[in-house]
Amino acid sequence: MGYAQLVIGPAGSGKSTYCSSLFRHCEAVGRSIHVVNLDPAAEQFDYPVAVDIRELICLDDVMEELGLGPNGALMYCMEELEDNMDDWLTDELDNYLDDDYLVFDCPGQIELFSHVPVLRNFVEHLKSKNFNVCVVYLLDSQFITDVTKFISGCMASLSAMIQLELPHVNILSKMDLVTNKRDIEDFLNPQGQVLLSELNQRMAPHFLKLNKALIDLVDQYSMVSFVPLDLRKESSIRYILSQIDNCIQYGEDADVKVKDFDPEDIDD
Ligand SMILES: Nc1nc2c(ncn2[C@@H]2O[C@H](COP(=O)(O)OP(=O)(O)OP(=O)(O)O)[C@@H](O)[C@H]2O)c(=O)[nH]1
Ligand SMILES: [Mg+2]
Image (tube, rainbow, N blue to C red):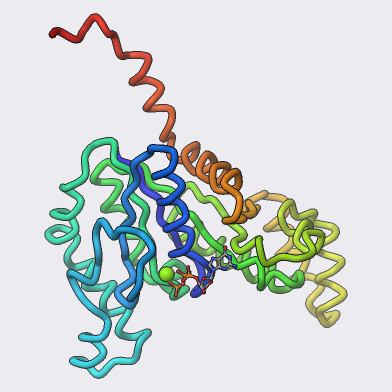
């Protein structure tokens, strides 16, 4: 059994920074993780890149050779990844052993996790290779300045949940930049009634019914809640990692192994 985090979220939400902080944290506590770059447009990395999509295909080449713009070229690259799952990707993943833990740093184009099938097929491939996969969805706390933006962030996260059908951990990133924590508290454990009255105040009266339906979706079904991430604090990274490990049953298998381990079995 392998373990994997699929790190997604809008452009600039802090995915690559999260991956490198997670890598450093794990290194410090003596835990092994491997970060995979799935962004064909990425140029710089603060983490050692275990597998790199740019070895398969590079964005600049596609833009130049096919005359595509950056977003079209990215979609082309991701389709190329999809077409090469059974050869290139399988070969790369074969380098990782049963218990390995991979973290996939994805591009930020929202269509990748809202409606095109590439990531969904990628996830199916990982599952077929016996990986337990979890989505880590990052939303930039800087954009959550009012209820309308929060709802829009929730809907994007929800579309990823529905599209990918995986255990899902939502993170509110860049908490070090939030000066007044009160502003954000409402959104960490959203209270339906509070959000609804704020939303109604902001929107024209003919949206009342829609507002109620949206808030019901977020509130009643508890589908969307966010965990704050402050990269300055080791405890914050540790907490988030424990939540994710829980989702993919990472520690549980290890426990079984420890329990099953019988020192008498070693013959030397
Ligand atoms: N202050 C602060 N800045 C951050 C944090 N995380 C990321 N940033 C900054 O936000 C910008 C975007 O961060 P990235 O990690 O590149 O974001 P990304 O989601 O990988 O971006 P794309 O791959 O382009 O979609 C960079 O300038 C980072 O330095 C954080 O926790 N705190
Ligand atoms: Mg990135």
